[in-house]
Length: 572
Image (cartoon, rainbow, N blue to C red; front, side, top):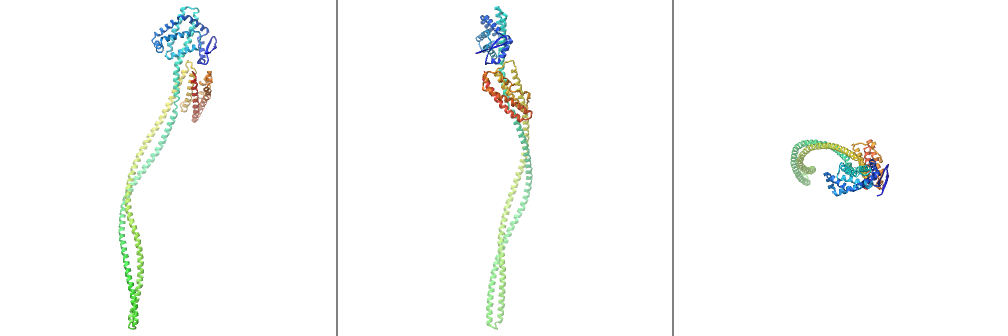
């Protein structure tokens, strides 16, 4: 690996390019400056290592024996390794410690020790105690050798040991904290996904509106049912009166039917008498015919008598007078018979007309009698029907009363639903407020990790930036619900936020040249832009405008999260 030299005030530190050390080199340089490590320190450490080289095995074994005397440490070693491997690790550490070079490999080896300590759950105080034991053992052996310039050798060991402890403990803390940081961030991210509250509140509001509509409809229906019940009761009462009236009418109709039947019987007798009258008229016609014949014969006889009287002369004069009188009587008889015949013919015509009228009337009377019989039957059926109607109307009235009672119960239940919906909506809002307050506390907890004296790498910074954006969207969402407010001064630019500082800071070339990095700026800027619009609209009371801005913010935030995830996967 290529090493880049970086000149400081009084020493040279070699740091590799393109690694996390490039990001953290400022802190490492501060640690070196603080402990006072220079090139001379490294030279003195190498000299001390040469002096202690013959005692490396004894140092390692003595240290292992002292460590294993404590059950807790022995259990950790045996659970995760073996004594031989642990001893070999001690020797490797000593080799790197006295090599006299601080480079990429050196720093990474110390950071790896910290990771192992975090993995085996070795507490920092236990590490410090055992490490001091190790350093005291080295210093004791070095003093026993009585080398020249002992003070500088001991000082170099103290400085390197202090630097190693900072690296190892820092790495241990970082590896211990990072999982918690990730878990807290994940919890926070999941909390911000609880975005059903608004829809739930709106749904509860719609339910409350519907219950109000149902209440109004129920009241109208109850009024209608009561009106129907009232009419049904009135109809039932009227039907009873009508049935009673019809019953009386039936008696009258039955009496009328009896009279009509009697009329029919009388009329039959009239028809019979008219028939007898026709027969008498016919007999009279016969008598008149006989009389006419007799008159004709009499007239003929009178004529013959006059002829014979004329032949008799004077002797037949008296007979001639008689014949004349007879003839005059015959003529008079014929005249009267003609008149009688005319009268009889007129009487016959009238009789015929009466017969025709009687026949027609007879048909009508018979039809009337038959109709009266049918009417009597129909009236009986109507009475039965009205009685049934009366019963049905009574049942309808009773059922209407039951329906009215049922509708009243429904109204009461609906009022209960409305009250429960109101209470549920209140509970939803309180729950949403609790969730939001919980997210705020979780965020404070997350920030406490970020504020610790732990150096986070690019991956953690990206992870934190993702959570920041989700939280911004979450705050705007809860602002719409009326659970929080956002002040204008809280709105930072896309350059000043955590992501902006990272984005416009020093980054490895493989990140800056990636498509995800290049695409990130535009949606990131939109997130801040629409967050500002949402706050402005909220201050104006324009909730619709807030929701529209939030939709755009949500869209831009989704792009930011997707691109950050892509960048996060690029970082090792």
